[in-house]
Length: 350
Image (cartoon, rainbow, N blue to C red):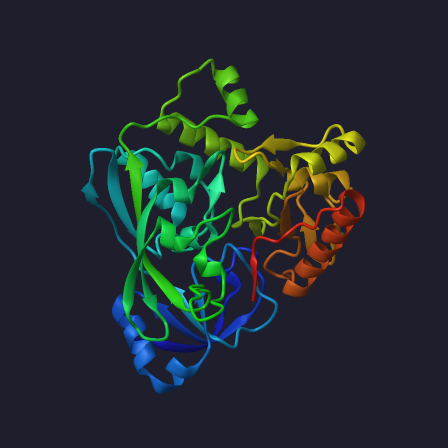
């Protein structure tokens, strides 16, 4: 175990915010976690688990001990009559695993291509895109309890997945509370990739690709390539323009609320959900309030997609976490005043 002090984090968060970890330990094996917990000073200190830094806004130097997850590895670990079971280390880059599974002939993750971050961060956020969420392809994960050092395994039900949500985003409350926020470090994740694969296509962008290419029955690799093209056209590359991807969750409302909004805003983009509720496009709400392309300090709203906040200062004069949150709160206020809806941020504020 190597303990580093005053480690710059600008390259470890996709917004490119300049900050330092006062103490950082790189976790390359389960033994590194055990060593951290065996050290009296580190064991007693608050801890912050850092993966790809793609879903965080850092508002100052991080005083908690930063556990930088760098566990690697990927392999087929089993199969059932219905699925291949693939395992990946929590420190693997998510998109690399999507690409690898397709190359190996295990379809199912193609709709989740080019989502930034690591494998370990995927279940925390229950990442999703273009009609597929991680929970749809999840089998189980391994993690370490950061209090006891004990390893444990969770299945999908125990992860309590919701829309961009999981047990890892909640603190435990009460005697039987099972929230794991700040209490666990994910080491490996396993996916069940369907042998009876079916394309998931019900989005306008994908339907447009089908029309343009006259391809009505795309295979998984074709969908993967389309998703990569669509995301590259709409979303900024964090290596070029710092960002944390979609900054706000798409809000869900009742059919009555949606009907009321449609009376005032007939063009609002909305999607009917299976449970009868309606999901609204947060990017459309933000754009309707005139925020696309606007900035506060070095924090801006991306010109091509209002759902994405970006670092206008680059690496030389980077945005601060305070500027990002000031812009986010201003957007929330605008949307609430016009639509009566409070947008919820996706990233974790550190």
